[in-house]
Image 1 (cartoon, helix red, strand yellow):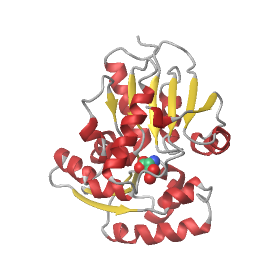
Image 2: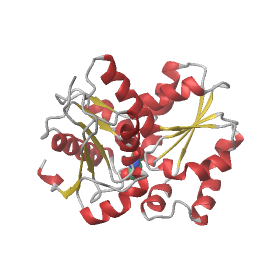
Image 3: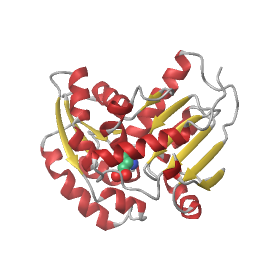
Length: 268
Ligand code: DGL
């Protein structure tokens, strides 16, 4: 048993889709969440800037006595984690490995699509990892840079978002993928729209949820799950705590209850 909290971070609100899954599969776990809302988006940052941000985010979470860190951000997991893993004392997992594994398990025709930010797609980590698990898989990626601002501004259900989705998904649809990874933790909010465009026969993989499920397996395997019945949640952000508390519920599918505080991430 290990009752210490799990640290989770993202560039902003998207990582809450991972926390939502933690709440479902591991309701006894305490979570300390950091959303870098003052520096979102990460998807368009240079590699150097992204590495700096990710190191600061980890150093901040390490000020708490945590048992594991989940990088609930597709961009940071694909473009920074391979380089920084090993620099820190904490056990750190990202979303790429769990989502790629789930996709390989789900696909029948071995044609897998990946949607992500520019940074995630450019890193090439999804195709690399999928092919290491299933060498004859074909992987089709698409960067969807408008999705994050649309979701963060509350346009998830707006017809404007459907127009962007149709444009982004056109090519991937032509490739007849049977499995599509939502490689950015903001995209589960667009699941309905993406699912309607792709059709029922395409399995959508939620990368944040896949990471939470993977964390559950790791903790269970080593007998490190919390023995608490109900977890406590603390949220930290680098911009307005009020805005986070207001919008966060949309990502969590329930109101944010727990402490929300602003922190000066540049200090870490
Ligand atoms: N949630 C982050 C991800 O999964 C993306 C948002 C961003 O560009 O910061 O990639």
